[in-house]
Image (cartoon, rainbow, N blue to C red; front, top):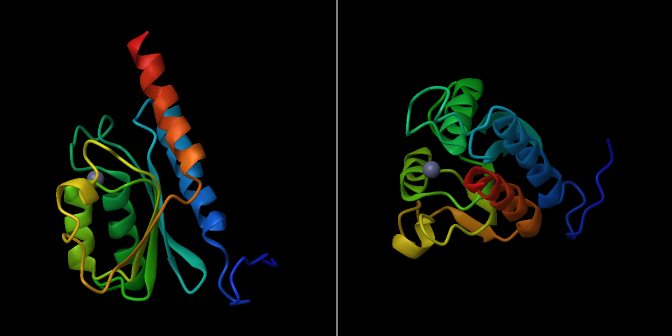
Length: 156
Ligand SMILES: [Zn+2]
């Protein structure tokens, strides 16, 4: 596959490629009537972990998309640290997931839409690892629409 890159780096695929994959994970959650949030973890241009929100199915308030993806990626790598990895997640991580990302020492977090109420950046923006680079607002519209529609339907 050839990637069209928006950066000067011809090797690194643009963030939108992987955010689309995170959105596909969010759609899997939606199909199961879960809050539609999805995540993927990428290492050297390859997806090594995927996850979507499973809090209803697992009866587990900690079963957020990011937590699933961290576990999957660590399993793939055979080690708990996710150095040189990027987390793509459709919605801004909560404090729990941002806190978990600290322990993984992940290199980068890219998220789509902000979470005004529970997003870590509003509550504690220094909770992530000092080495973790944050990029916000990638495919923001698509990520936000999915979750807004979900809650609109819930209220009807
Ligand atoms: Zn979370």
